[in-house]
Image (tube, rainbow, N blue to C red; front, side, top):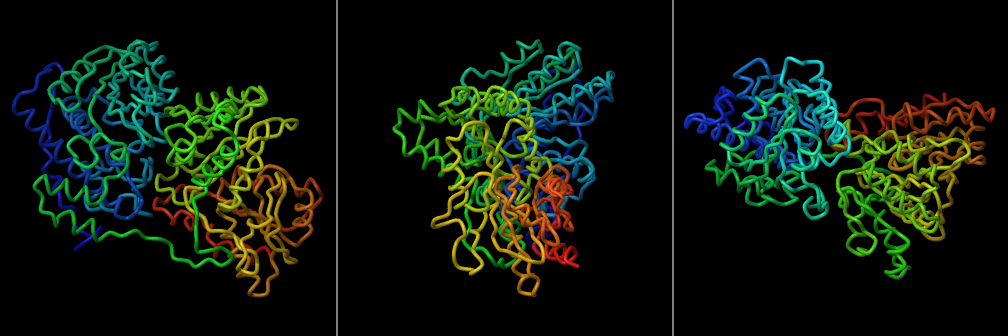
Amino acid sequence: MAGAASEFPIDLKKYKKLSLDPTKPQLTVEQKSTLQHNIQLLRDAIVLFTATGAARGVSGHTGGAYDTVPEVCILLSLFENSEKYLPIIFDEAGHRVATQYLLSALEGSLPAEHLLHYREANSKLPGHPELGLTPGVKFSSGRLGHMWPLVNGVAMANKDKVVFCLGSDGSQQEGNDAEAARLAVAQNLNVKLLIDDNDVTIAGHPSQYLKGYDLTKTLEGHGLKVYTVQGEDIDALWGAIASIVTYDGPAAVIAKRLMAPGVADIEGSTHGHDVIPVKAAIKYLTSRGYPESIASDILLNIKPTSVPYLYIGSTKEVGANRVVFGEAVNLVLDKLSKEEAAKKVMVIDTDLEGSTGLKVIHQKHPEVFVPSGIMERGNFSAAAGFGFDANKFGVFSTFSAFLEMVISEVTMARLNNCNVLCHFSHSGVDEMADNTCHFGINSFYADNGLSDVQSWLYFPADPLQMVAVIQRVFFERGLRFVFSTRSKVPYILKEDGKTRFFEGDYQFVPGKDEVIVEGKAGYVVSFGEMLYRSWDAVLRCRQEGLDVGLINKPTLNLVDEQAIKKAGSSPFVLVVESLNQKTGLGSKYGTWLLERQLTPKYGYMGTTKEGCGGLSEQIPHQNLDPQSIIMRIKQLSQ
């Protein structure tokens, strides 16, 4: 059989259990040979099954999991030696999920063949480990750099155990790890960190964009016992781990190595952070002595899938709003001299420039661009501080899921009347293979000021509207939040099915809702990537004789009195969004209607469930596809 239906061709039963005693810090020849055998076996397996993520188009993060195999093999050998260790390999780099799935297979919780369904929709192998979803997975890692504080608590609850946590030079950039270090030292917790320092993150090399960042000095400064070794020197790595295990208190081993050592096409590069390309995986496994067919029969017979559907009301052509954000900012900056732009605007990255649209700004307007690390709170506040002057404007961007990390800083910026334009990409759930912890569904958290202060939350529906929004609001004062999705979106068409709604003489007006089509039977209110899906549903209902209207609400948190009266005076209102149904627009719109004595039938649809992995499968999984919208429309219209 070929593709994902194949048997797993690397025999994990060849893994050799080994017991290592930390009071004996020097490996015997046999121990070293066994470790090297296990390391190579597991690394080969990781290359193979993560490459299936590349084959099916869902990405998959090979390098980090591949890197830390030596540390994992040593920890498993310690667990074999004694029960004084908590037998969980916590990891604060959630994208190294391949490690957790491989451990599940080794322990017998998953059949090895199932690894070939890595990140596939409904396979229960999403891009970050989720407790309770995947058999054998022992924790949810959440977002990058969130585990060490939790592991501190685990250690406090298990004082008779040694507790381990894998780290990375990327995750250690998060400020909450500094807090975790202080607590671990103050309470003398028996927490042991094994940190992969490969000098690679998504956007580049920390040694270049974050000069002065030194893990050894940082952790020693907090008071931890730290050993720094070359991670590929197995004797040195074991000696250091043995030393921290026998040390009383919090300690760390920093394992320096190139990213993905020994993998020719991605070694030492930022490409190693993501999934290994199929051709590179085949090349690697062939060089390791496997028949080429072992990998190629599997990888070349896995193809990307999608949820087939021909939408009406929008174009077949699509664009990435998260990229268009940067292009739209460039259109504004192009009108300024380099000197004026540098004086007036500062754009700060959070290691995501290629994902959030800032890369094009970096390339075209380096005079305003500041590359920075994985430090959402500090970087947001830096943007706010730049915009403390009434005539200066900070620009900040990260994923929508990470908005939840900067809420206090948002309040601080608001209290100081700062000018910040924030772009939160990867909003909603569409095409989120990383799954639940990366869902950007609590956007309304940004609107946390009092009623006498206005924050502006904008969610453009297509690339044309994104450009119009940025052109209009870039130099507005105060806090402005612009949202976009990971997925590409089509261009919205007018009812004639030919004319693009947001081109020509269209001008965006903050706070103004937009009537896409009038309707007497009721109104659907939507925005962002759910607008084209709602428009499809509305048009199909209209074709059946149900005169439903559609309103686009690109300013999420302001009431347009004229539009809400129009919708609220009709027989029903249905809000359709992919934000959290508990905290999104739908949870507020009904109150707004009642406050105005408007009492139509009311319904709202949003994200209600944990994810299913995959990409386009996430929307129907949440019952937000057009057919589900149509069903809800018909229920309300009865």
